[in-house]
Amino acid sequence: DIGPTLSHVLSEQPEGSRLGTMCLASADLAAFHARGHWHGGAQIRNITWDGERFARLDFEEALLPGMALPTVQLYDALQLLFSLSHHLQPLGPDAVRRVLRAYDDAWQAHGAGAALRPDLRAFLAHLLPRLRWVARIAGWSSRLSQSREMKRLRTVLEGMAAFVGERQAGP
Image 1 (cartoon, rainbow, N blue to C red):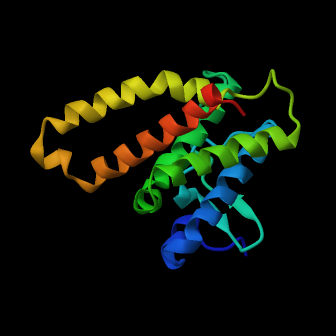
Image 2 (image 1 turned 30 degrees about the vertical axis):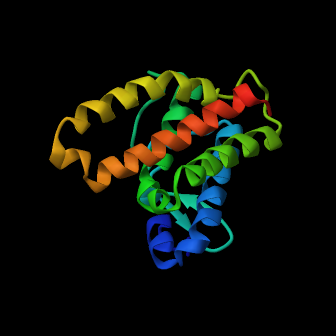
């Protein structure tokens, strides 16, 4: 048995316990990437947790060879992050930053070569203005502006910005 989906696990956990599990999942994905793998569908519905190990389901996206491995791995990290937004939003932007930091720290701890390591901070720094633009456009609609999806997006964007800002502040 590979356990229930991460989506189910997080829904059943008390809110105060979720951040640790989300950080573990993020770190596990980074270790998976550091071994040269990619998922292509790294949403929490496609990850299971048996209390000790994570497993991945539904390797559905045929992103290689069309995209470089580091790009596909960044796509995985974004899929995981955005699929966690339901659970991250009540915890705030710092929770998003901590999940991203868990990914980055785990990759470094794994000792994989720097040439193979996708630069998550640089990627997010490049992506943030585009995502903020989407959020601004959605903000023109009073219905969309106050939607739970926009609240989640704003939380994720603030957390991404904090994570990206850590580079300017130092390690």
